[in-house]
Image (cartoon, rainbow, N blue to C red; front, side):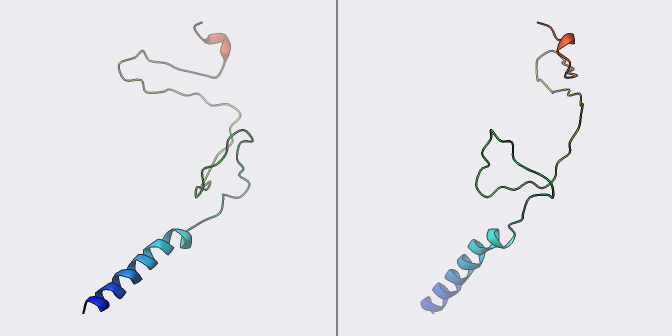
Length: 77
């Protein structure tokens, strides 16, 4: 009985350890890593967008509201 349980346990462990490699995916078509940043092993690019310009409003808890338009002329300095 113990050997049967051991076989079942080892089988389950084997199946679960193979699951990440079974769902491994490639990068989104046309995507690429930044040349200065190394990708962590096991990660892939699922989706991305390329924008010429985008504003960004970060959420800062307890800080002042910030609106960054990407234009250096409007920043405090």
